[in-house]
Amino acid sequence: MKRAERLHALSELLRRNGSRGSSAERLAREFSVSVRTIKRDLGALERSGAPIWSRPGPGGGYGVAAGASLPPVSLSAAQAVALMAAVSAAPDAPYADLAASGVQKILDVLDPRTRARAEQLADRVWVDVPPTPSRAIRSALEEAMAEQRVVRIRYTSRSDVGTTRDVEPVLFASTNGQWYLVGWCRMRNAMRWFTVSRIERASVTKTACEGHGIDEVGTPPANARPVHGRGV
Image (cartoon, rainbow, N blue to C red; front, top):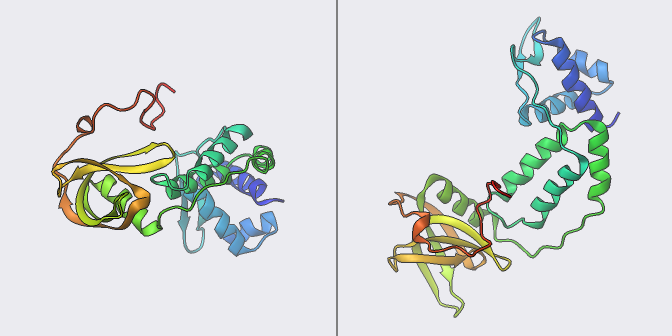
């Protein structure tokens, strides 16, 4: 049995058992795998959002929380590959690592036939992407944006002039194949667009942003839109 099939069968078994716990040893015997493998599978289900509990000792084991159900996943193979393609083609996008993790959670709990078809279709979609900024820089920018704290960056302009600036992040923007950090530059006292690939260092400070809003950035291009997808 392939892992995707086993995950699906394991989720169904836990669902049928309801609040009755099953030990890892029993589950391992049921699926003819090692206890270590079962625990890894249970971890995958839990990371996907399944309300799994664990209880030590006699009568313990693993089960699904009372009154809860495993989250339904009803994507088609093409929809699953669309998500994989979008994430793979934009590894430099903000929160790309979290997006990849989210897609993997979805793949882990697809039904076996859909998972197999998605994997076959995915082999027919190739991407070629340029090198991305360092993970440390991206993490700092993402954290500063999410927490709305000032980020200190070392930035090299197009004329090769390097400066260190404190920036209040307002939004991330992608245009012409480049990602930008748009924010209030405290050195210039103005809104500025910083090409992410030109940021050499970034660190999140403890200083909270002062509330500069998206409306201060200016008029977006006619085809620009937020990524929440409404109206797409």
